[in-house]
Length: 634
Image (tube, rainbow, N blue to C red; front, side):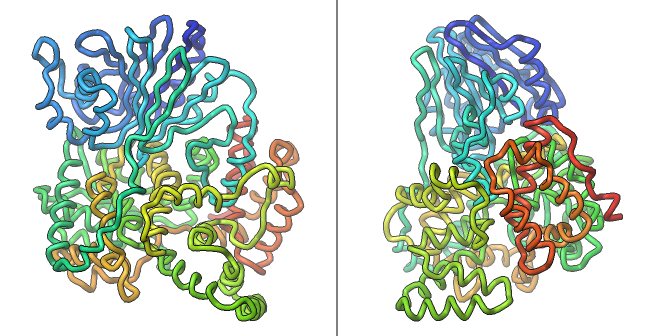
């Protein structure tokens, strides 16, 4: 796991070495073990290394191919690299070392772009061809590893994080109104957008070629076209469970290969328990597992995680905190999330990553299972709301009127969903952090940009036909929320403490298998993740598997009415920060008062706004943030 940065210019106008070194240093958390640079007349490459496979100097990057033609900088892991090696013979017949970086480099030398079809892993990499003077970049199928880039006036720069790309980007950084609007609707910025016009993200499952002719981007894998196999409805359920069980064990086993201590995050839920169970089944006698426990019972997964760890024979570590202790991570959160990001579950993710890093360098996670196997209540809600929207307009109008009179927050949300269009628009509403509160951007931005619903519709246009509403929702989550929010959260939160996080549920073979599986095996009679739970019951008692789901949450709503209220007010009334953004300031202030008074729970969109203001203050204007609240919360 590493950080990469680079620059290309066909005319040889490369960044100053001192500026480039500064950009590379901004990736130090991602790679504390080693650092390296390489350059010629047209390209400059930089790498920060977290040594995981082949800890020797033969794993150093940037790495030059055996024939001297190609140079690579690589962030990630290729889990099947030993199998790929068996298909390759490097010039001279000898491998220089044991790293998957060398395997990847030789695979590209042998097969070119087609090497992507053979890779099982998480990756973002760049390969320079010294002969053709061409830069090739690629990102893994599900987008576990980030890759940002900028193409301005013939200069191309790229990096693992915006903080490394920014110093190398020519010209002023202009706020992109399209990205701003979608961020305030969803709480994250989906690829290919970034907050700045001059910076973009390479989308998951895409590659890019850059040379003197310009920049060309193409997709090499697309889960949207995989049809649901309805003939599976006739299959024996236990046979399908057998297939899933074997597939899970295979994907987990492939992610156990490393030369450093390895463990797993373990909550009290199904997904991480399944990963640890598969670790045991794959031969790990005593998996190292890690959990954050809280004194407040409504947030505490500690006892459930301990029980699962004992049942699975894990060597378990728990750190007990008060929920308010997570506030101490706010300065780190603002620092490492160097683009606006509003998922507050990053706080406990950072806390468990910090705990795990004391004992291991690699941790397996359960991320991705909810999207693959129907773990969220949103999927059923789409069906329910679509049925309500099928009522005659007079009936819908009456129902909306009644619901708006009910003081309950959820009643108002349902009222806002009535009258929406098809299932894509309904799902966009359910997944929006803004819901029925209305836009916070000014009128000019609204007129010149598209809302997130239009982006969802465009993405869904590539779906195979004959999807149920739940299946459509899962695929939208796979393409938007998982890649752009959850996986970014895991990547940044873990790398903040130089920990590599591996997600077995993102193996493309498992993803393709789950895409073919009908929703009947995922959501049934009100039960989520039906088949996955059936498999887990082979390893844990049913009463443990079927305990109520509890999210990895943080009481942001209460914090904004208590220990963070003064901090939030200071940010909202900072004229310098507000002047940088095309926001309707009166609406922002009104929203804060609505939440602070307890009239409505507006914390999702309010937190997204505050994280945007923090980003502008810290990363855009380089000014001091208001004092954070840990002292107030003590």
